[in-house]
Structure formats: C-alpha cells, structure tokens
Length: 116
Image (cartoon, rainbow, N blue to C red; front, side):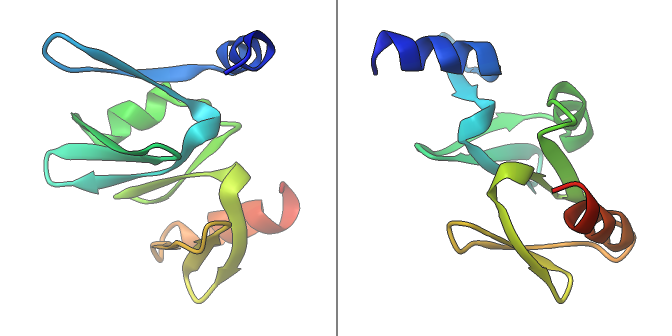
C-alpha cells in the first residue's frame, strides 16, 4: 500500500479489535457489514471476517452514524455497499443479501430512498 493510500485510510477512521496480545485494525470503508453470532459480533470486511465478544449495541455506538445503519438487531450495514432494497432485504454490491427487520423497515426504506 502506497503512502498516499495509507494516509487517506488513516483519515477515514477504523475500528480496532483487540485479541489477547494482538490488535487488528479494520478501516470503516473496508467493512461490508456486522452480524451478531451468539455472544460475538462478526465484522465481515474486504479481508475476510473478524470477531469480537461484545454486544452489537455497544459496537454500533462506536461506529460513525453517517456510514453505518442498523437494519436488524443482529445486522449493521455499511451504507456505501448498499445496492438494492426489496422484500425486507438489502442487497449489497457484492451480492450478499441481509434481512431488514419489520420494525426497522420504514426507517431503512426512507434512508435508502432519500439519503443515499
């Protein structure tokens, strides 16, 4: 990665996952979505998957609201990757479909239509 690209990514922000003696930095722009898996939150990103033992609500509060949207209590999506919205599902640019909960549907639909 060249110095200009590294500098640009640093400005955009990141989330750090801490393991026992390691840290993994995941840039916000590289995250496709987050999903709840039992007691863990799984970050699905361009380099694969990473997980952390945490509550989804706590992780969501730490993410920039202008970039991420909670579409279900188990899913948070990076709005940059949203492609289409249909039948209570969001289709991402990479072909992945994520469910949108009934209570979140009106707000997600409004966001998709008006703020994208």
